[in-house]
Image (cartoon, rainbow, N blue to C red):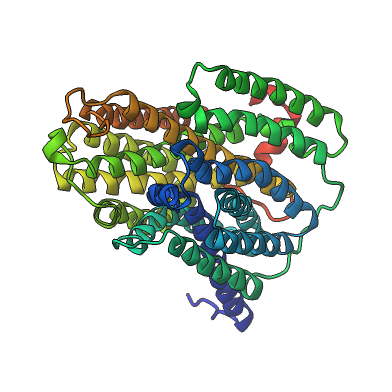
Length: 500
């Protein structure tokens, strides 16, 4: 039985799909780099700009808050008015922010640059929406998984590259931001020349009131999460911000139920698969940052003073202990895509949960040997990559075409929220559990029990992902993404809400 030879048109489409996936993967990798880029150099920034620890923490907080505000708005804007123009504009803003951060001679100017870099987080949901238009359905899970996998890889790559660029005695933290500028320009050129113009535009009015109320609610939620350690978890500012977040969330829901063209369709937002994917996003984002920060702090502990740790420099911590897991994240992403295609996202999310629980459990039980720390990091890296491959597939199979940008934007925020929670919890645990008897003049150092607890909580987080996969996504067997119209599962949920 013979098969027809591929036509020139089919060959051209296959090549186009490849270059589109490459361009969007590069853009997603660059935006993920922006989130973790300054983590190893906060001390250098603090010393160079002569500011306090509390103030310099805004270099990371500003990016998180900016992403929370702009990602849903720009995701929806891309659905309405064109994804490529929105992508190009967002990448242009990221380039400008990177240049400002590179040239900044004061903390406010550096924070401004970081705010502009944070707005680029909207690239990820926009990229997934472009893939849904341009990639054949049978290839779509793999393409989404590859783009998603670059998120974990980019986060790890930023830590390693920053360590390399700031390893000398006269290190300048601005080199890291110039590197970010170069990557941002490269991503912008790739999207301009390799990504085709948008075919689907929904049009309509932009729900600025919904965007404003959602942005305020997210600001009030993420601000105390990221600053609670400095403010005090029971302080008036922290508790007041959480209370304000609850109030503004209620206001946002009310607004979205009243406006004619809401930013977020509440039916889509509470649709069970979408809701479960967002909960999984929080937990996987938490796990990723718990691994990055926990391992980074652990291996830099001075063994002579603490009795544990590896006396590693920032460079060694990044290259020897974090880079292998980041590479595995990238290599695992196409495998995750194939598994999503053949077995469904629920199955892949279950594998991610098992890997994550095993990896963190290994770290909690044995973090005294180099092989254990690196080996566990490899397993956690694969877990994060599989989790990132599964979540967009769940969402794409569960929402109509015109809501894919905003749905993935909300999922991106859930992962960022999880990362913020992970950073806050790790910082709080390590600061609260310190070694009691240290030589005079030595600053407080975390006790080993703090690291054990951190890794134990990471294992619990992935165990909860297993519960979501097993119970929350029951009945979600595989992606059914149909070009140009809504999915069956979402349509059924709208017709028969009780069934979901």
